[in-house]
Image (cartoon, rainbow, N blue to C red; front, side, top):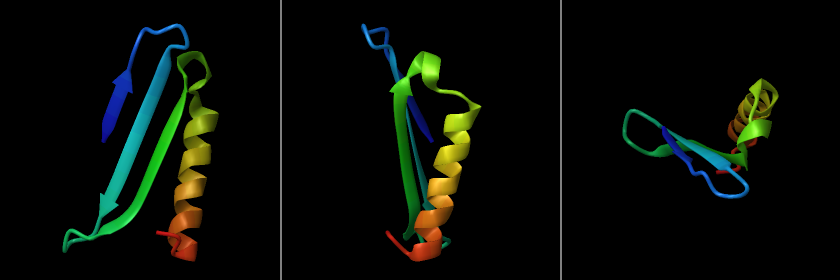
Length: 60
């Protein structure tokens, strides 16, 4: 889990998450970047749904 934030003009916050299996292989990876004032619960829900779709369709 990594969070990077800056105080630039656009005030961007980015989050990247990687899920690995017991043997260390990559199972899923999701990243999300948005202006800080727009990064809300709705965005987090959207990322979770996208992660489920990637895993369900094996788009890794």
